[in-house]
Image (cartoon, rainbow, N blue to C red; front, side, top):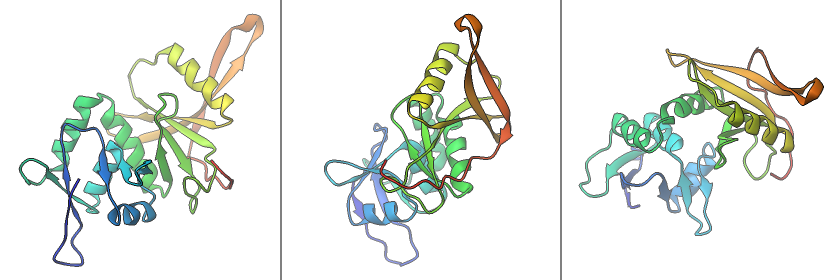
Amino acid sequence: MTIEPSTKDDMPPSLSFDMSMPQLVVEKPLASEIFENGYFGHWTSENTLCLEPEEILLLLDRGRIVLKLSESDENIASEDLVIHFTNLNPNFWSRYLVYKDLRNRGYVVSIGTRITAPFRIYSRGGKPGESVSKTVIYPIPEGEDVNLDLLDQIVKQAKIDRKKLLLSVIDRLGDVTYYQASQLELEYNNLEYEFRDEISPPNNSDNGEE
């Protein structure tokens, strides 16, 4: 990744991006600015900032960065990014809608690597590494079949991690609704799932080490 300096103070930094890659790595000092202003990305062992696809697209849409093709120096449009990331992950657009909705609500969001916990949210004012996330978010497009074995795994893992699990349902208009899910153990060890009424993502207030 290379940084092209801006000639005007109000111009966003220009970053080169290899469209064969699933992530964008940013070096300091820009990395520190991006992280501190909204806590986007996660730090690597090389002390660089790694941005996930949802973070890259949101930063581009918000005008925080400009992306250029690494091989031709042409600007990359948001539509090009969506196509690129959807080719890598068919569920990208649903994930992005949830991520964007949570960010628009004012939450700091960490993007997880486990399939059972795609997103973790922090309290307003909290940040990864200094605040404990008590809530994980799992996106589900409306009308899409849910794998019950996967759902069982997701609910169990949230219970093990002592996290509250919210299922975010994305309708065909792109609106996001959140439901709390819990596991009920019934007679004869039959398992049932309870989906409570629509709720808003909670405002976590716990502090501590993640």
